[in-house]
Amino acid sequence: MERHKQLLFDFLSKFPKVTVGLSDLERAFQGEEIDYETFAGIILELEREGSLTAVKSHGRNGRPVSLAYYYRINKRLLQDDNVRELHQWGMRLHPDISLDVYYGLSPDVWRADLPYIEKIDAYLKQGSLPTRQAPAPQRSYELVQDEKWITDHGGQALLERLGLWEQLQIVSVNDPLMLAVNPSIEFTRKKHLHLIVENKTTFQGLLQELPGLAFSSLIWGCGRKITGNLGMLRLQYPVQDAEHELYYFGDIDLEGIRIWYDLHRKFGVQLALPFYLACLVKPPAKGKENHRFSEEALRVFTSFFSTKQSEQLVSILGNGGYIPQETLTSEELVAVGRGSVWSQRG
Image (cartoon, rainbow, N blue to C red; front, side):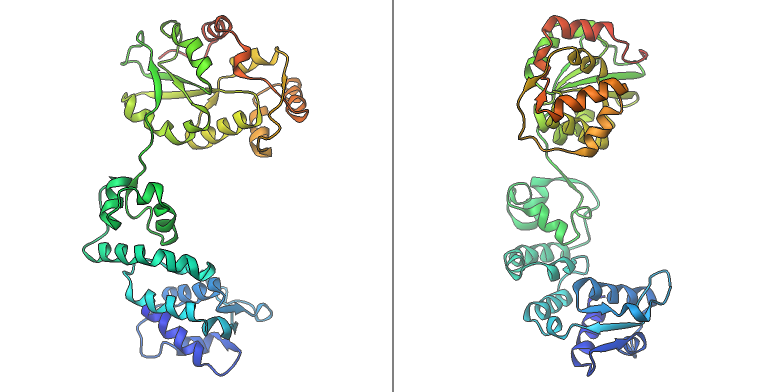
């Protein structure tokens, strides 16, 4: 495809007019074997790069991969040294490496990335794409001989720019999940419940009484860190042939709500609603004005409460207030944990 793209690039650079018709573009490939999908893909790439701009008044051809009948040629962009260099490199590099994104980035980004791109190109040309997953440090060393490049030096972002992140079968190395396993739980049960709490104080308050609770594990979220390492649960709690329900209890503030919302979207984590309801009867505190606001997260969060409770939550947060987990004493935490029907025991 890169060779075909270069043919079209050369054709447009020499084309005498400012606008070019679809039939003219087809003539650029006379004598070449090229199907419509490949042809259309190249045209659309040049559209995205800005080398071609559709003339809207002439319409598009209406095919599943739709092209304009006429395009305006951006001669300045075609004559740009950086664009020419990208096209030349595109023809030399492994076909799985895509340089499309660099047409819209600063040439400085391209220059900084190029030494790594050459190493990745050499790796790909040694054989096919990997068929088995590998931890990020291992794959990082294989690619650029630096085990920390992917995780610490921008390697993941570069691989995403090249369209290679998923193809290279890289497994992120997350911190271990900080959890306590309920010693009274039977691992043969069909359903396992897991409670995630945002703060260490709440974790400690429930830990001693965990054997009397319905939860198979108690997880310390450590604030936002939980959004990155909750995926470790299946490895650290390897009970595979069972249903797992995850509940979250965090501070009633904008950050705590955002953390739950991110977990809800990514892992289907539910609200540990009885704990939140117990907090709502406590007076709010002032502060936390610097937290980022997410209208969508707040909307979904409040949808699990009654209308009156939702209004109360919006009022507290709207007036710069919050309710920390620590508003509940250890005794209150345990009472809520024991007295609530979380799910039917499996």
